[in-house]
Image: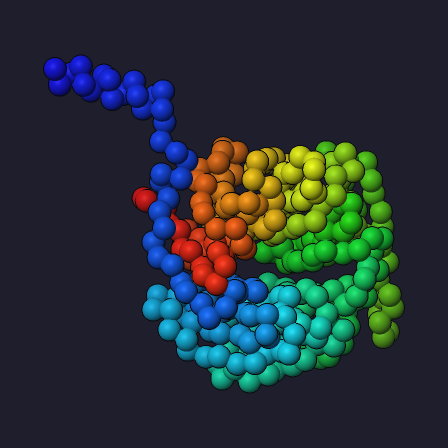
Length: 331
């Protein structure tokens, strides 16, 4: 009798497998005073920075969710919120860029002409930011000098450095562009499309730098989202275009090849790598978690806002109105 029941249970598990979200659970919900405009973890995973539409930034202890500091960073909605890898500074952007000391939360520097989006190089030496339509700049905030002014062919949606600081990723109107900052060599885009373009940096002071860019495209698919890996030389290129098939390509930059193409049926609006780059979260109408190596969806989670993985664990934050839902895998 027991053996028959066991066989029946096995048969049911094969015919009616558990949902992909079964291995993940909602561990807690963080209630906030308003809908979070941006949020990010400190490099050590201890603190959670939350920015609101009003320009206010809250620094919370992630375990207790207690507010350890709250300040008015800007008078406008904050478009970017990034920690330096050292954890010493927090960079905020809302029509201008500001760098804050995480020791006493004093303003260290103000970055002019950074209006929409920007972040640090891994060594914390430079900042890259969008300073207007079709323009971006790399800025040395300690010296106050502009390293390079970049004018790209097409409106820039996002810009970011890779974890090793070797590449600069940009998402423009109909393609992504990957710049090798070390050698300036053109990245061969044969595996991803035929388009190629080159870019010269403007002369700044006595030195001038020539920058070459490889342009990656797939059937002229608009690429509006980019996200660098946390540790490995990976880049996620996300296509978000209503009415067409949406996907996320994961590119191994050291080998210059695509390692995965993920096609969530829920759409693509936000992307986040896990701390070890083994997983990627994709947000659309709902959040999904994918194992990159197997190109397999392993979780489907509630919450329709931005997704952000912790820098130290598999904890995943999913915005849901004025709340953050914290999901963790059962391991």
